Image (cartoon, rainbow over all chains, first blue to last red; front, side, top):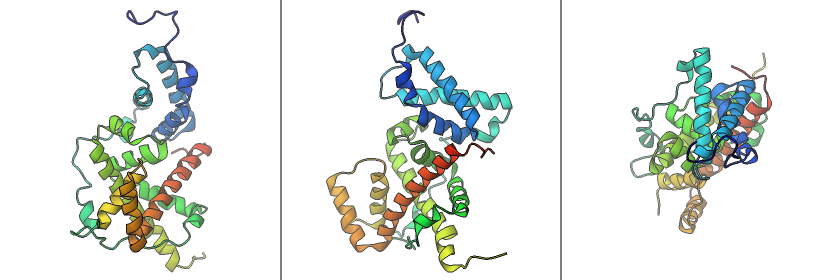
Length: 206
Length: 66
């Protein structure tokens, strides 16, 4: 404050620039809060706080990371208020690596498939079926916690790899390994629980 | 020739950053001959599409609270 501008000086980034990040922030908040109104409020509070402290912000590259940092605090505040924080606590990345055995599950020691992907019958049709989405959700949420978080930040929120590394503290090499494993697992889960099933099984009528 | 494990690592990486020409060539040569890696490639692209559809649905149907 003392070094950079006073109360009547315009902040260094304007609202329009901040608002460009709104869709990503909203998706992030929605995944954590599972409620549109709450997510919207959290994003609104984040953008407001960001705008008010815009002179604290350094460098355009990290803008989204910085905003997500603020958003995380807003979300944490929400859980503190509703005393449900344990249910959605942040993943501890220092914890033990539960993906260690994956490579052996999916590949032989020479690097060739152990089993491996079958062809899927009409994936496009699956997207139109409500039951498919239940399976999808179950498979996605069934990933080990760390993997699920990295996968969702990438594919649902839409962050770039390097942003996710900053956000989670993963090294770049670890990021590639984690995403590879997440995709292997999710693919296999969908194959076992949906695509293999529907090709062999007639639809049951009650 | 790279193994299926290495190829799928590259395919996965290619969804998150631009690969070099050599890497992209290695993938296309491999999947021409290997149906399981070809399936993997198609299916992870499908998963990306499904993930986007999933979050769109979540955003467009405010009724779904848990």
